[in-house]
Amino acid sequence: MNNLVSIDPWFPTWVCFLLGLVFFVLILTEARKKGRYRVLRIAAQSIAGLALMGFFLRPSVKIRSGREFILLLTSGYNSAQADSLLKIEPYLRVFRTEDFTSQSKIPTLPYAAIEEQEKNIKYVLGIGIPLPELEQIPNRKYTLFAPQATGMLKLVIPDKVIINQTSTLKGLFQATGETKIVLVGPGGAEDSVQLSRPGLHPIQLSFRPKQTGKFVYELLILNKEDSLLREPVPVCVQQEKKLKFLFLQTFPTAETRTLKNFLSENNHAVVLRSQISKSNYIYEFINTDDKNKINRLTAEALNSFDLLFVDAVTIQRLSPSEQTDLTAAVKSGLGIIIFFNDNQLLNESWLPVKTIPANSDTVHINFRNYLRTLPRHKIEVTSAKHIEPILTTGKNILAGSMRMGEGHFGFMLLSETYSLNTSGNPDDYASVWITLLSKVARAANNQSIQITSGFPIYNDEPIHLKILADAPKFYSDKIKLPLSEDQFVAGLWYGKTWAGSPGWHTLKSDENDSLNYYISSKGAWKSLRINQQVLQNSIKMNRQGTSSLSREEEHWAEISPVYFLLIYLVCSGYLWVWGKISI
Image 1 (tube, one colour):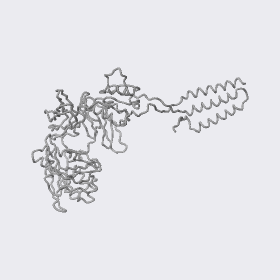
Image 2 (cartoon, one colour):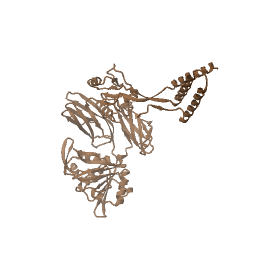
Image 3 (cartoon, rainbow, N blue to C red):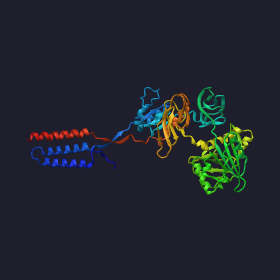
Image 4 (cartoon, one colour):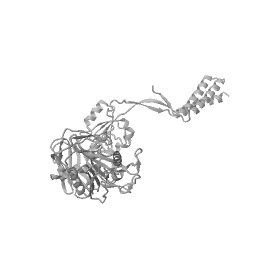
């Protein structure tokens, strides 16, 4: 059973108890006095004591009051849906957001009042509350009725774009009819895709930059009505970082030879160790002055490399101490990629993956709109940890990575990728390996600055940052940023800044770590931003809806101490006047 009265005394309870005893003594004293109106005097003294006790105890009572649910209209709302809801629930109060100006007769719910009114917002119609203001509503309980999404719903711009390497722009596009999408760079059209029917389509557009620098590509969207939409695609092209690779193999293969040549031609350092007997190895050193031979794996030797390639036979022959050192090196940042040998399964318990037999030994992969059949190992990779897919076809993961501490563990299930290179398709060969290498290698894992706010970001909106550093000092356009460290993860910091004028900007630390980011103009990427807004309005939303919520709510209401003080003064005044008259 719920309590109907609660107290919040000014003083400790025992002080109030002593005060009550004093008034009890006064009541007894008043009862012993002779004279007229004895009962009335006792009652006045008792009421005065209770009033004073009430003043110091500060009681509150539980009351029920009706809730005024809100129907909030935002841009893109369906008037028929609004009319239907008002017919079913006529008590709803209708408001609109500040950015929705087409219904001037409907009162506005200011953004500053959204947090205060969040428990009363029952329905939101349209694209929802804008993203910057949505931060004021941490626990969204309302039901969202959003319009049908069209246009670009998702866009993934590569984090790292390297000069003279093929990068891919990926997205989801909701077409209403025949649509052509063209990616245009500084030198003209780079790639295009033709959508022949309405519906949701995954798109991929490739480009190969020839210069380093900060560029704004364009995405041209042309439908059958000849409506042309131009959207900016910010691309920061970087020089490739020179990495150091170590190959450990039981015997030379065409796969490792082709990959070794590909890496060395791009000026990476390569050390290759091949086994010729149980304890004898031959070495090859390319683009490196370090000629140290690694007959046994140690943490010290491994920490000088960015990525280790090792075949399944070699990794299963490692001694327990080598396994321990290799695990420690990966957890401290080293990348490792497994080559499989003749469909041999991995059974080592210290590895983060398990392998099972697969049914097929070939796979069909779509390269730049043409289909190619490649051989694959008859192996499927499973893991108790999350696998991030890197190369897929249908539901099959052909290449992927998993995080191990600060490093990554990767795998490749294609068995003859070198055939792409030898058959005159070096760009396809590069596209197969570059994404995997950049994800798994140590240098790729050292990005200390990350913007967690989604693309696009508009002027005067918050930008949320995640930073990995020991004691960082970061600046946004030379303005120092306040940072707060994660209470559980040492060296993980969070920050917030505000977007400036449209164009390129830079985040930079005092240790020369930097990240270039782009601020879009307000009119850019409307469909993409609308979809993000709808998605974020739906996150944490009450999945069961709000129709079952009661219109009545209980809350505690404090009885004003003024009432107790007035009652005390009236009763005490009566006793004082009676005492003067009776003398």
